Length: 343
Ligand SMILES: [Zn+2]
Image 1 (cartoon, rainbow, N blue to C red):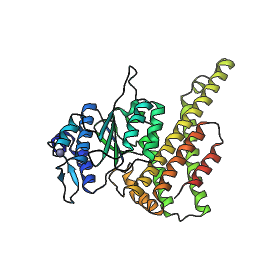
Image 2 (image 1 turned 90 degrees about the vertical axis):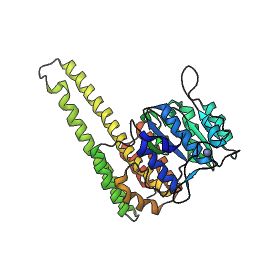
Image 3 (image 1 turned 120 degrees about the horizontal axis):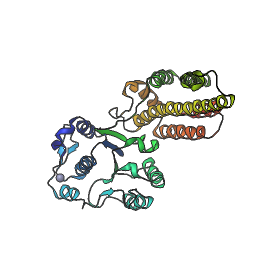
Image 4 (image 1 turned 120 degrees about the vertical axis):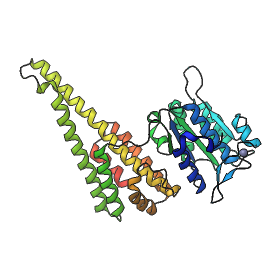
């Protein structure tokens, strides 16, 4: 099939074609949706388009669709094209193993044999087991030249955030990208604006740390208030002291775990934003931003750093998240993490 035949997916396909027309081909795409066969068809069409012998060209002269008739298109369509690889869950467990990833990567690191691009499609990318996901992540961080990875999933939230954040996401129905809480969005808008206006300097950096800690303090207060109001302690005055004690312990534990979850969500929103900044250092494209309303702030910051700095930021936030999951001192971990960001 060619792109023009996917009449039911006009928006996402148009977005993809517009970016091809502008010559902004990504290294990695994540196609999410509700129908895996359809996603496979779209991935096949992108593969055909990249290597087609008689492609349809847009106004800029860049390829935007395939002919669907040449030998390359026909071979790709029947999964016989040597530069297009498909990885699918195998075995009874329906998982994708590290061996499958390694096998394909060893051929991807070679030059294309017939086409212009090596294309790898990972069908049901949410089925990558942890080792396979980590191996693949390394490839995503330093993708071989002239290679394009297309990940397909019906269940994007199950993918590692580190993988999600490095892909250009297109949604063909089903669950979409960054879903942020309203409070976190408002904080992130302030925070990113502060960053954009900041011209370095330690004082400004500490102001950013202060903003994060203050927002976290608010989250903690809200969590405490909400959970305390729902606790049986509030309903029953006259209970056995041992039961009361048990309820108190339970309440403290649930406040702590809920707060940790909210904190992780907040840092994830920061990660989504830093991912946009990194993307802007790479592709100079605004079409795939997760937080388009913060575009001007993201662009300002992206102009001050390079791609490596952008990538370091992502790793840095991931490291901070991991540290916080252990029993490290919160304020210190956040301070160190934030002061290290390249902004
Ligand atoms: Zn063709």
